[in-house]
Structures are given as structure tokens and as C-alpha cells.
Image (cartoon, rainbow, N blue to C red; front, side, top):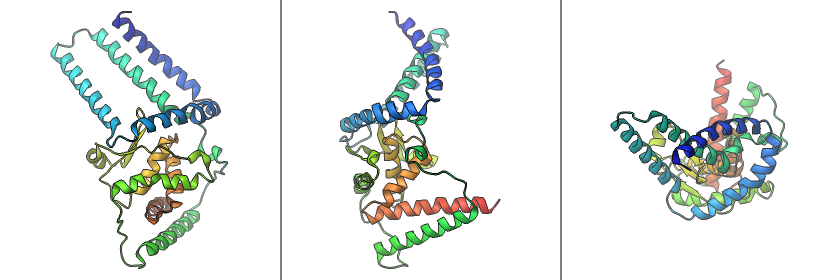
Length: 286
């Protein structure tokens, strides 16, 4: 088959994919059963096994290669005077179609699974300002307790003596601890990497991300150490198939706050306290 026809068919396939995803999104139970708890755990485990031992981010290298390819292609297109627009259109369409397919097949379908509230059979209800105040107070109390356990002094600042790589390597201990109560959070074959894009991530305000094509959990290596344990736990939650940011935050807190390492507990309660205080301020200022 001629390349031009392949590009055209792939472009049409992209439109078909949009329809399929739209339909799939209406059946979260099926996604939960056959993808999130069926195919995806195997995909994630295989990728973590293959790429987890590599000390650098394979996914970031992939992004760099794709970025360079796009820049070169754009340069050639402009240099040739925008010729063969129809052919270029279908090439771009084919490229997007392939990326769209692998994004959803490898990880993206997790966006359409059941919510964590349903999975854990939690009650979701409205909360008042007083609830936020009490939550903030409880978290501050927990934070003080962990602070004192670390420093044995309520005025000294917490200094994390572990290296950042040690913090990343220890994330499995927290997941192993909570997996006794929540088996679906069992985590083997760690694949957590420092992002090669840490500097731009810092400027953009991102602390990490999951690469959906390589299933590597990426963290901004420039963040302060006291934030890193919670960020790492959060990104691993994405890696286990929890696409929602709020759900990854919940799991990240659950894992880090139950971690045997006090530094993880400190990081979890510090971040949760900040969220709670910010939410209290937002509600109280209305």
C-alpha cells in the first residue's frame, strides 16, 4: 500500500478513535474491569520492568527526539514553500492518530475508569467551613508531632538528611505498607526518574508528571527535599492507573502518611496542611 493511502487511513482512524473514546467514556465499569484492573496493570508492570532499571528518563529522550523531528519537518515544510499541503495534512493527521492511539491504549483510558470514591466505597459529601478549619487544625497537629519526632525540638527546622535519590528509591516502602489494606496499591518494579526537563518544569510550576508512552514517573529534581516524598508518591499513583489529579493526591497522601520513614510522613502532612489551609482561606474569604 502506498504511504499516501496509509496516512489518509490513519487520519480517518483518528476520527474513528474520537468516536470510540466518546462511547467508552460512558461505560466506566467496563473500563475499570477490563482495562484499569485487567490490561493496564500488565502494561504498567512490563514497562516498569523494562525501563525501571535505566538510570535516566527514557521517556524524556523520546520527547526530545519527537520534538527535534517535528522541528526539522516544519523547517523543511517552510523551506519548500508550503508545497503539497494535502499530503502534509494527512501526514500530520496520521502522526496525531498514532500518538492518540498509544496514549489511550498504554495509559489514557484510565481517565474513564470509576472514581476512587466508588472503588473504595467512600461517601462523598459537602463540607462546611468549620470542617475545613478542623481538618487544618488536625493536620497542623500531626505535622507538629512528626516534626518533633524528627528533630526532638519544636523550634528547629526539619532537615532531610537523605539524598534525593534515596527518597525516590524508598517510595515502594509506603506502597507496600498500605497494600496490606489496599491490595490494588501493591507496587513492584519501581520506575521513578528525575526529569531531564526539571528546570522548565520548575518555571512552569509543575512538580512532576507521568509519561504515558513509557509509564515512567517523572519528578522535578529541583523541588525542595521536603516536597519530594509526597510528589513521588503522587506520581506513582498515576503510574498505577489513577489518572485524576485529586485521586493521585489522595493516594499519595495515604501512602506517604503511612510510610515507615518520618520524612515521608512529614512531607505528606505538610502538603495536606497547605491544601487544607488554602481551601479554608478560599472558603472563608468569600
